Image (tube, rainbow, N blue to C red; front, top):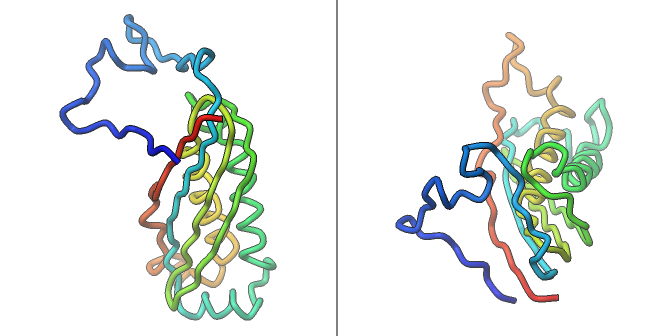
Length: 171
């Protein structure tokens, strides 16, 4: 595994060096055609905060819409596969593997999404899309039991979505 180079704060790009902008300021997709293929992996994680009673309902399979985690897993995987359609400058990449892992606590569900590809660009946006969509699906599945008497969601929130790691190896 070779870690990808991180840009330090003092290496921020000037307008002339921006990869998604032309000299005239027009937005463009980066040309990766000359880059060699690499095996790449990205891991993202996030959590949705829920009422303890909602967590219990999920664990006991008592949510009226069905199996919350199975549905969220499908949503996460679909989001990974369709990231290029929702993030404007993302390339369509060949996804070789997606792993999802849910961890339940008393008041939250954490979702970890691992994405693998062999290609010319990384897959961290795909991992992030998988996490955010998977957590949104959880919320959608339980929104009827998460609402308070006024129809609001005072205890519900998606937080701490982030990339945990990314890797790159020459193919």
